[in-house]
Structure formats: structure tokens, C-alpha cells
Length: 304
Image (tube, rainbow, N blue to C red; front, top):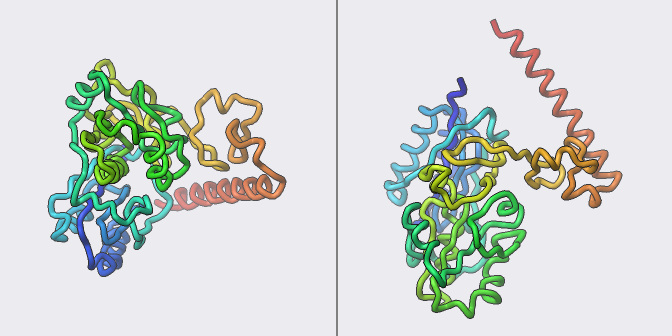
């Protein structure tokens, strides 16, 4: 049985000395054979990593030993095989890129709602529910009645909000995202813009799917995640979607049956955007991946 787990975590907290911790985080992850990505910046930390349970515990203990993150609350789920290819610890200007310097979530943010409180709010009238994720994410699952910015990047959210939410400043704005980090920053942006009643789903969709049984859930579909699992269902079970290796869009079983789907080359979302050069590159990548799989099998047979 696979003993690996995935840990997702973030926290906004002033951290002027963040660059001094890059090597320490990298060393812990290398020693513990942990894979994934950790972003550190002046505004805090944001990461999703995978490894054995004890290894992940050691990493979280290390992060929690830093004063700013002593109350860090990670979310855990099963890895279902190899979740990431490598480990990266990166220094960034923001742990989630919005590009608006005056947004400081650790100073002001929306009202965080538990899964049960969120469901009650969605039943109220005159509530604007906003999905702060990008269009390829909400294409496979969402809360009923949600408004979609249809953005390609979170950096587009401020402009979208200015254009489309300005007339709703006196309404209740309920925002959600995958793990909570984007709607926390988005809620801070709206509050700075004069919105009065801003709410966010605490822990994001992942926490909601962990908390709510499917028959009582207001979530429809699956939740896109940024790793090889691609999507998750209720109780954080692996979903049914795969990913197109050409355009990175989530693809369903019906997409794979399309005449426009070629494994590792194209899918119904991108088939008309491929040229001979890109097709050749994708074919070469598929060849190298298959060769690597064969080499791994040979190495495993050599192990006594």
C-alpha cells in the first residue's frame, strides 16, 4: 500500500528574513525525500509537497519551528502514486501572485466560514458567490450558482473585480478557491476597495470535500489540483480526470474518446493550436518518458 501523502499549507505572515530559510527548507526536503513546491516570500509561505507520513511530519515540524508559522495548519490527502517529479523551494515576490502591493492579507481579510457555515450562507438570498480560480479549474467542478471570472491567471482578478463586482459593494460576497489562499487574498483586495460583507470558504474546496459527505454537499463535479492526481472528489478520493500533456487542461474519459485526442500530443481543447514543431516536441517527450519507464523497470528487477 502506498504510504505517501500530500500536504498543502500556506500562511500569510510578515517574513523579512524569508530568503535565509531557503537552504534549510531544501535540506529538509532532500533529506526526507520529499517532492513538490514550496514558495516563500516576504508575505509568507505556500506549499504542496508529497512524501512518506513521517517525512512530511518532519518538514511541518521544521516550518512550525519558525515563529511566523508556529500555528501552521496543513491539509493532508493521499498521494495515489508519484504526485510530483521534483522538489523546488523558490523565492518569490508573492506566495500567490496578484500584483497589487497594497493587498496585505495578514492585516485584513474576509470572514472565514466553516463548511457548514458556507452551506448556510449559500442558501441565503442576495449573495454573490465568486469562484476565484482560473477557467480550466472551474471547468470540471464548482458550487452551483457561482460567478466565474474566466481568467487565465489570478493576476487578472483585480481588473475583473473592478469591472464586475463594483455594483455589489453592499451585498454579501462569498468567495472560494482550491485551498483558501487565493480567496483570502481576493477578499483582502475587496475589503480595501470598500466592500463591506466579504466571506471566504476556510480551507477552500479541499477542506469542504473532506468535511462534507456527497449527499449533503453543495459541490458539483471534481476539484482540480496542481499535481499528477489532476482532480479530487469528496473525501479527497482521486477523481476521474487526466491531464493533457500538451495544453495542461483537465480531460475527461469522453475527451479521450474524441477524434481530436492523441495521447501526450493533443486533446479537444488544443488540437487546432498544435503545429508540426510542437507535435514533434511532444512525440519526443513521450518517447523519452517511455524509455525512462523501461529503465526504471530494469532497475527495479535488479533490486534483490
